[in-house]
Length: 135
Image (tube, rainbow, N blue to C red; front, side, top):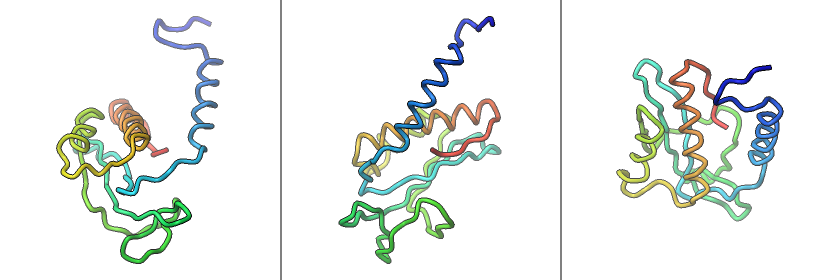
């Protein structure tokens, strides 16, 4: 098999994917400043990030600040975003959140790194027309 100049071997790609899956399933301490739901607005050519506030309970779970109910990761949450951020690229969106928002809706570095990775994935999906599903 001939690989393109910038391609990596399939076995290396598989190892990277397995490592990423492992990292995606580790315990993370949630950001008390809230969480983001990321999606694409293809008509506008933008990456969107809806920010939702939350509180963290004694068990380390995110709860609705108004009701105190634990926020499920899956299912149909009917919440209203506190803010929507939009950008044409991962960099533009990241700068709007970290440099322009006051106060910054992030308090944890690992959360910021995660968002950066997701924004790049969303940007690539926007550029190449593929589906984007937030990790």
